[in-house]
Image (cartoon, rainbow, N blue to C red; front, side, top):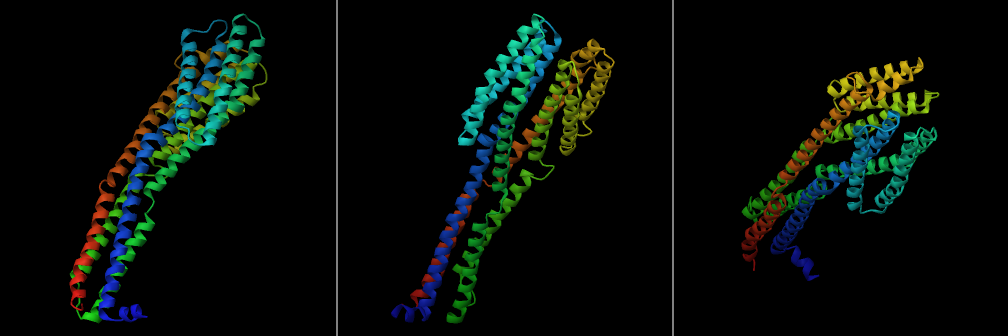
Length: 410
């Protein structure tokens, strides 16, 4: 009862304003500092872990597809393949193994560990089937093509789907981290607005009780809270703009170009397997055109439809049409030459040019993505410490401004 009676008096009102406003400033300062520090931590996580793992997952997918295409190309060479063709296949396997090791080292959740375990278990089986096909092919045994189709089937039904699942999960993690970095710190904003409301309500109560229009301490506290609000929201808005997470942003370009490179490798596998079957090529032809259409859409989405990559795709399609025409005219040797030859208009040359352009474009997009995340992190520099100091100063200003008024009644 005595506390209620005291709260109704002028010193009680001043004391309540002092306590509520000071506590609000301290809570807001701690929360704002923690939220902004968490955003800095997110940017470091993207640069040090999330984005490199996404790149490793993409590299794993591409390398596996390239190995499958390389194995088919080597088989088409007949007998002993050229050292260059063999080196391409072995390099793809080495890159796949390196990417798998990186993905395994960064795997912290059960789903990712299960995916990489399945890939690690299937990869030796795949390479064994390819080597068996190669040994039979060098001796001229037709059964070699059966082993190669079995190997490719393992790649298409197990290895690549698992790699795709890992790839999607890793890029989803990058998008989630970017979203959290650029998301408004709503808890901080609400608390800072409550501080401003407490300062405003306290000023009205003080005016009614003391007939003083402005208390310097409360006014300084309000100014500090407003500055902290502008700082935290301004830094977040600037970071969101630097991240550029829209449909044409660096993150979207990385995903589209990574998917384009994967689709190109899949289409190349379709192209070579069509010749290995030496039969009805309807299914691989349909798969090839499906993959190249999706590839063209990805290039357009990445803003590279009219680039060198787009022109390389056009040339590749033309070379593939020439290959199919030769095959349909029963000119198998001509179709193989068109598929794996080194001529300027061959499918192999056009595909190599396309893959090179996609690789370079992907590297540039990845650099843009990382630069954007790094710049976003820079916008939060000193903000956790600075906003905390502002709110501590606001709490101190409230005490400094109201304590003398309270002492007048004690």
